[in-house]
Image (cartoon, rainbow, N blue to C red; front, side, top):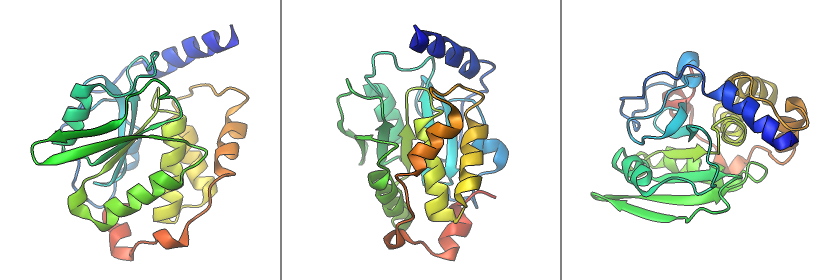
Amino acid sequence: MRHSVLALVMMAALTAGPAPGLAEDLTARSGGPSASEMMRRGGSDAADGLSFFRPVLSGVLYRAGFKGGDKGRTGLSQSQREGLCNAGMSKAFYADFGKNTDYGTTQCGGGSLDYAAARSSRPASVMKAVHAAIKNPSQGPVLVHCMWGVHSSGALSAMALVQFCGWSEDRAKQYWNEARNKAPCSGGCDKWIDAKFANFSVDPALTISAAEQAAICPK
């Protein structure tokens, strides 16, 4: 009963007043997203059915969730995968909830999208994929999504801001908190995000240059 009530509260918090979908070059490294871009509620023209499609690192990392959640935990549809692939994305990760998802590689007009599972409590694979995308611009950006586009995808995005942009953990947690749109957290939100960051530390092998930071990190 508690989980069903939580889901209803989340639905109310996350479905109010969505903005129009994106129409932009997802591969552009435009000097970093603005604060308003990082908080927008809309979807993406690249893939219908997604919400909270937000830039984290310009041209490198985006985050999202599903309109109304993903109750079947089946992840991105084939058409969504093809749309993201055609938009230039190279990788997509489903954080924490994709137990019924058929992962794999989708081919599209000269490119491909690799789709895999991720854990917000084990961020290493996502951080390595983001680093590879930074170092190889022709590879295409990475999408990390979860069921709603709030908690788990937000945690991995916050960690990426610490790893690649030099944000403090406090600043990254504040970003996560603001971006969750007042959605509730089982056990309390501070406790939830603290537990995720307890398994994260900056990897010195994944450093990037000042010029790379200037091109992708938030303004």
